[in-house]
Length: 341
Image 1 (spheres, helix red, strand yellow):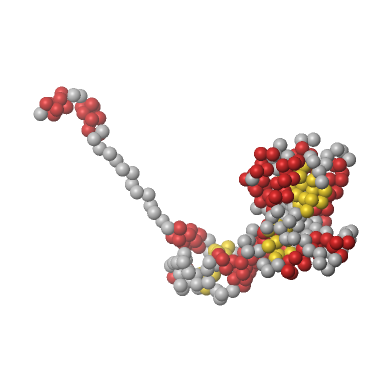
Image 2 (cartoon, helix red, strand yellow):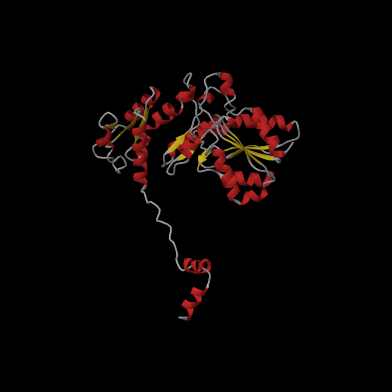
């Protein structure tokens, strides 16, 4: 009773404040939506918004999709816009690319994206490159080192000169594992000195072992395939200026010979990687990551620098092509930048 009478004697403003502090408000629960339903909702809204949008793929219509992502869409939009296809990923992916080129907005669904490998030519060579096409260069000129080098179960080699080509192809043939040999078509007609040991029928180059093509003390330059020659040209130019580059010919992309690269970086304290492929997720990026994660990182006196192809499909015009792949001048510029000279 004393407590109640005390409240009565207080001003109303104070009493209401005390009462408010006795209640605890809980925010309403957030709406929970599965990823499946969110995708379904997004497609439904776009199909409704734009009549140019349509969905095609295996079992997307009457079966509502293998994972029920397209549930209810066929009943709502019919056969014209929700289209069941045969089990032919290359075929219906090509239809989607062609439809998009004609002004429609296709949604191309693979039953599981693992099956997209069957359609990768349509995805990469048609969908990704059509805007850049004025000839066949974009579809016929690309580096696959990072593509195949990404995949466990494969060995991947990338020869530069005649010695590499013979020794690595022989080792690949004898290896019990699947080996991808990345031959650069521009190198087929280029002559190289062929040492006596390479002329032997027993000549082999071990897979997984790089070669130091030029000894140096100031900077390590790592490359594979055709750009190795550019690196050696750049090293010869810089040698006249007092800069000695150690040039490493990787020879093998997977398994990568990091021991040779790390030992060189620990000696020179600088690193430049050179490749003809695109920069994103490339071979040079992998080398830089491993250096950062390994013992050689503490030996670097400057950040590692990558020289790569331009981040565009290969253009057809020669002058544009020359500006899309690493040139000797680009390598020299990167080396001087790394050495701060």
